[in-house]
Image (cartoon, rainbow, N blue to C red; front, side, top):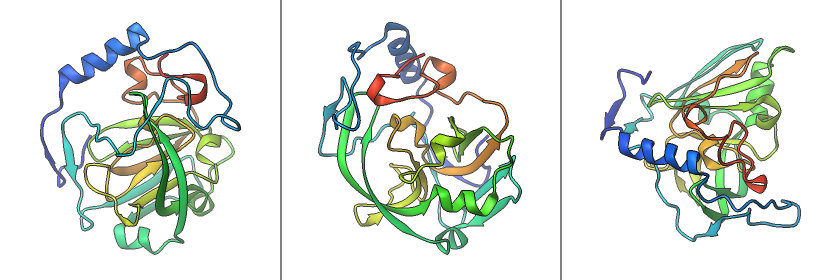
Amino acid sequence: MADEDVEITGRIKDKLIEEKQAWAREGRLLTGTSADPARDRLPPGQLLVTDWPVLDLGAEPNVTEQKFRLDVDGAVESWLSLSFAEFMALPQAESVSDIHCVTQWSRYDNRWQGVAARTILELVQPKPEARYVIFHAFDGYTTNVRLEQFDQPDVFLVHMWDGKPLSRAHGGPVRVLMPRLYFWKSAKWLRRIQFTISDHKGFWEQRGYHNNGDPWTEERYS
């Protein structure tokens, strides 16, 4: 559930959700091909764009820096609960990566600033039995990845894009960045990171989207 003290404007677009579920049933955009990320920069079926399209379900939480809180918990040795100031006090790093949306667009050379996933891992120390990571957003959205997918050098919790604070429309003040997977895995408006022993499918994964989400093998749908 969304935090009660965070204002959410707009209304969830049920028609949009139904349309995306229909895409999954029909296998829309699938080309039946694969690519090698070491050789092919653009995944199969993707179109290159220069802007950054805004995609959401119609409702956006207004997460101010004062109301921001990031909890990291579950199967870890040390739980974290960070205010925005405490999050910003963690070691910061810059990264450049491409992003690939399941709706067919890709954008090259995005410049980010944020906290590396491996910094979070060092702080919380996942227990040996931890296998999965579940991202929870302020609007109630969730998505799931394997722990080894989170534990990569290009995975970040970002708050800056191309030299500017991450906008509300794009998931600010803090969102996940997992550039090796389709972008629905990079949860906007990050509220909680939960380490689990068993897998828990997220919002789109429960609605026909692939549990893994590799763009180069076209893992768009289950």
